Image (cartoon, rainbow, N blue to C red; front, side):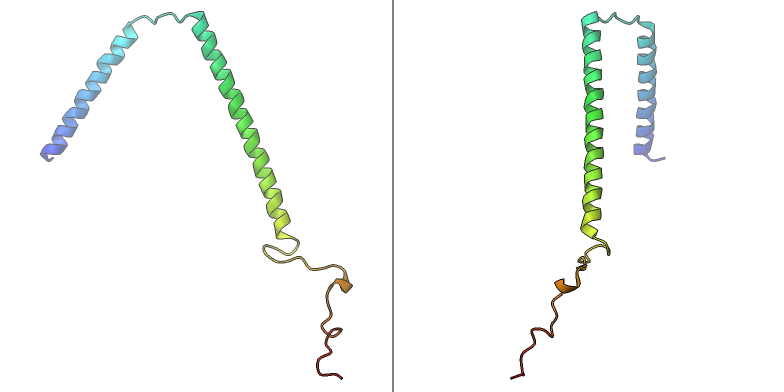
Length: 104
């Protein structure tokens, strides 16, 4: 083990011992009572956060549904980036109808 590794290991052992001492001291001390107005404020904050997250989730779900719909409609019937074919036969121009070059 190099000198740096030994120093790091020693420091980790010291940190672990300090954490154990602090944990024991906190466990031995009685908890301080929390005033009712502080508790009600915390409860209101938690409720507001729950509502905010629920609204955000609903918004994400709506956005995902809209995105999926737009992607499906952009694909058309024949796949991605393929233009839709006209369904009415006379909507397709006939090149022979307008070909008058060379006749006379």
